[in-house]
Image 1 (tube, rainbow, N blue to C red):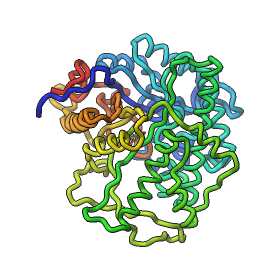
Image 2 (image 1 turned 60 degrees about the horizontal axis):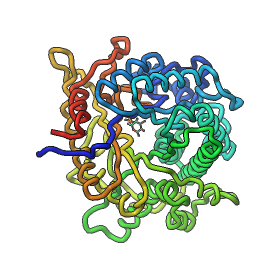
Image 3 (image 1 turned 30 degrees about the vertical axis):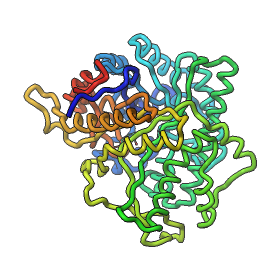
Image 4 (image 1 turned 90 degrees about the vertical axis):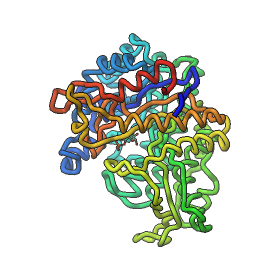
Length: 466
Ligand code: BGP
């Protein structure tokens, strides 16, 4: 393989989130969030019974972590503000919570690292979940208020904002597939949460534009949305029904958000099919005008895996609700066996070109891409450093396809690896480690570089892979 060059101004950074790193559970005025609720309720659901308590101790070690980023040549990192840390139950600022984020942003500035701020990363405050969570319009309004307060509080410090990380995940995991608390399996309820999140996103963008016009934020600020887009594939020689499964899977998972952020509406064909199949979306007068506000400045594309589907064996589930697709197992697939996700680097190229062709004005960056591996201790060399050659190969393969997509005109401007440092992966806790940097759970959360961290530094030096 020859040298791979990325454009000169292509940026490298890393991604993380508040609930997966901060820890400091219920401290300094932080309210309970839905992860704390689940941890308190059924700790046995979490790998090794590690709940949402400590994260990777970013709350205390942020300065060290920012210094480490700098040492690897990274230019930026993304984290999220925790709604449950920033506001109290009356929607008023929690001064201690705000002070923590101000300290993080000041520190990043000191090291000349740009912070990208995301407002929501699967972390509904518990008191709002009890009022209906994303099924409730009251909560949609509360989110818009939270966004407004965040813009007012940090709008002069932060340039890059995102409304949501992976807004598709809670509808799917909590309401459709029943995998996450509150374990509901109901596509009807799932699509209504998805619809309400689209409204919440759009209201927040509206608040952002207002704050910018009023001069309470940096005038060069940008707002975006991040989703885990999954390029859709089906079998060779597909039937009409297989193609229909692709259309609806792509429509609900990808185009739902792309049409919203590029054009200010939801995909008509998807809404029509849903209606025909008896899925009722709770639309209110005035919603269309709200969705129009949802157009963003740029997009974050988290890429982990493609989606492979085929026509469903049964058109309805046990509750009589429609099924739009069944999974299709591609015989040649290569798996990350620890996470159960397919590794398909070419997907990042296919989707990058889809963005270029179908949404030509939309600029994007790869906002997450990474590989979680179990028991990485077995890869330690004599000096105790994890030799994660598999991670180097993973990143290299994806960057290679990104470079090719850019060459062919895709408007991709940067790459954030997930995650800089091993972090808490929801109910998988610390089972699969994603970091370029190891966190010693039995060693007081100390940080140790892995081989991949040294390798990435060689890439960031000249924006090229040798
Ligand atoms: C993305 C999320 C992250 C992160 C990552 C890895 O979907 O935005 O929060 O966790 O996936 O997934 P997991 O931690 O479930 O292995």
